[in-house]
Image: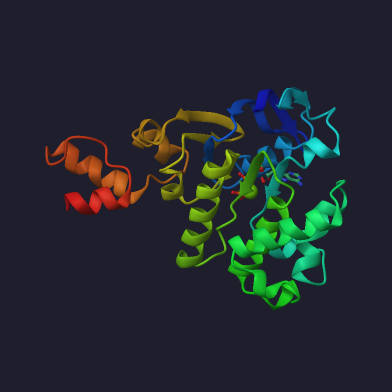
Length: 264
Ligand SMILES: Nc1ncnc2c1ncn2[C@@H]1O[C@H](COP(=O)(O)OP(=O)(O)OP(=O)(O)O)[C@@H](O)[C@H]1O
Ligand SMILES: [Mg+2]
């Protein structure tokens, strides 16, 4: 598991993250929500030792991030919002292979993994293409593939769908959600799109670098006044179904859009 214990982090004179505690278990999908500047990306970078806490500790499978080596660091895969910032290779294949080259993975095994993952993500046809020729959605798939070939135990996904259109957004979200379930990967999924948090095992809300809510999606989103005060939107389907519940039309929380449509 990844464990944040009383973590503080500062870039200057004020805390960007304060007294933060969180556990992400293998196979668990944790959604992290919060308005701009609330500390989400800082937490992403603390999760794999890219940043070290000023106070407190972050542990990956029991080892402090201030002590772990490259092998374990590679087990915590990080993907950011803008794939253009993540490209390093002149072809898609080189790009996907980049992280593997620093690990002791044999050539044949590396090739096998690259082929397998690019087929899964449907980017196999672009392996010899320059990443700059791809669309935003395809570029994000390349960035995700580059992390998956390292066979991570955990994925930290920082607004990876923010720049995508709704169709690509859903495709990439569904892909990582299902893959993580299948491979038992622990995910910290950072997003502004609260409907993406509906299927999470746990939702965490940040405000001013502090955790202000944590729980299953229904528990967290039901607190409408808190969500509003920290600038986090409640998913439309959840909000509307709660209104119907108050009117006596539905009997319980309805979380996803399909269930909601059935009631309508
Ligand atoms: N490199 C930096 N130098 C100084 N301050 C920074 C730096 N990066 C972030 N901060 C500050 O730290 C706080 C948290 O920033 P962070 O990027 O973690 O927020 P975020 O929740 O990811 O925001 P967003 O939704 O805009 O991506 C903000 O107040 C921000 O201004
Ligand atoms: Mg951010």
